[in-house]
Image (cartoon, rainbow, N blue to C red):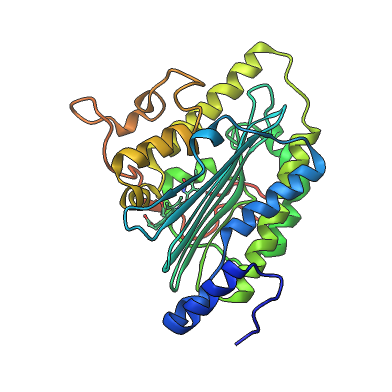
Length: 311
Ligand code: BLA
């Protein structure tokens, strides 16, 4: 056993020891995504002024229906960042992390997206700067934000290979920088994931600092609608929904999704899910329960080494 670090708080030490005696297996896979969030906010405060988000008053922590899961929510904003928020869920068998950053509509910088799911023996990871605009028809957007930083992806490509087929619809929300991967837990992998997370985050933070505001009202409108479409997709079809509903119940999960995680879905636009994704409309006009219409696709990475989409 590695020694318990003396810098850990007493609370953390007793947690570690308890786990050691009772559930040895899970200690090995333990990763604390709260530390990931703290580090990202710390890096942010070195560069820009963070203000608390009004959402923080309503969301800070929740205990799950099982009495054992803890959900921790943190939310900030800055003059340019509309919402920088984090949710970490932890219980004895699983850790979940959902960290995102959304710009004000005057700025076209990408959306920061880290979604990590860890259970006893598996990890499902999406880490990306999700493009605000469709890269296949906006080569200027790819040039502006991605071409220069593709080395970040290459650095982790071997450690975190492509995770295999995924919901076909998701690919258009991802950039050529995306780290989509699955792996078995190990301290090395979790350490590498922490580095990758901070490196992707630093790249995003730098973009938010460099980006100038759009003067053209039509551009601001386009940015707002693009962000609204993204929020509409995730508030309706995100793969984490089932787990969130089981953790806190249907009503609370819905509130968390629409008001906290994907805040803006009810404010940034009036178009409906069907307006954006008409292929999901059923005979009676409601949204299909199906997660995907296309089905699982992309066995291998659909971008070449330079980041060009090859399908
Ligand atoms: C699985 N999460 C997945 C998968 C993807 C993502 C691609 C693989 C399954 C699939 O192909 O759909 C993540 N998909 C994304 C992201 C976007 C997207 C980030 O389209 C952005 C546009 N994951 C979470 C949270 C939970 C969670 C908060 O982020 C739980 C509360 C759980 N994700 C989770 C689980 C699975 C999963 C349990 C496996 C179950 C499944 O495959 O459906």
